[in-house]
Image (cartoon, rainbow, N blue to C red; front, side, top):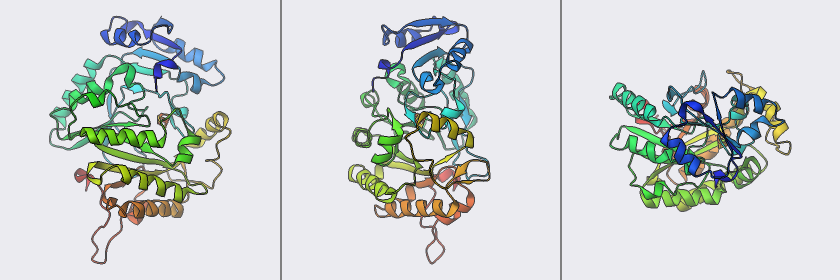
Length: 363
Ligand code: SF4
């Protein structure tokens, strides 16, 4: 993806000017102007004056430090959570998806990379100590793409080393890129899971600007499996459009044509959802997108979603597609209500669940 090609300026927080990690990153950005600043206020002000602050924010790199990195995934009030934890090492994303919620949450936030990784190491050690009786899943793909800036930061290598010999803690690196070259140079571990968000070719092409093609994502996943990694997939957001069923059927067929079921740790499903104020930003930035031209209902937490019967139909169809490959027990729903979950978890005649929540610590 060559992220370095589209970064047009680096702002360097004076507090981390002497950091060896800063030097390593700047050495890869020869020719890109660098300005030393005291905090991010000046950058935010510049972005605020831009006609497309979201688009501009993706071209500005801010190297800084932060105090705390780990937090429980906030999920959504009233939804069935999956017990996920997040590490916010990079904030914001150089890719540009029309449905991305960060357009709303991080409007004037440059691509922010925290270089004080030793602080993360200390925080993580304490975290492991406090949670030592539990199996946990932790990922970095909540406020950005886990690997989109990896070529610059090499954070994936740093994180994998922190999770080595910690079999109870799964590290998930979630991406829409094919940037796994660094990870292919190191020894995998069963608790390191490389994950790809997948969508139909039509949606990848029209809604996921800057992301790798579906083919390239699946090729990268195949290479990861061949190297010994476990992989995961996220069908999120599933978008309902004319031809959606055939589109997702083709993705699932392609997926299982390349990836053995045993290599898959989990697969999430989540239909398109968004807060109302995302609409203004998304419509302005992606006038050609038609994904918002649909019937939505305002759900219990204020977000817009497809009507519940349609969501249940979509999840049932996806479950059918996965059961054709005996993989339905890998599925879970992301940010869904207990009513939709109940409809999704099918029982056989004896009342036993056919689909199973794939996380033993929550079942
Ligand atoms: S890859 Fe994820 S974080 Fe990046 S723009 Fe797309 S939805 Fe947003």
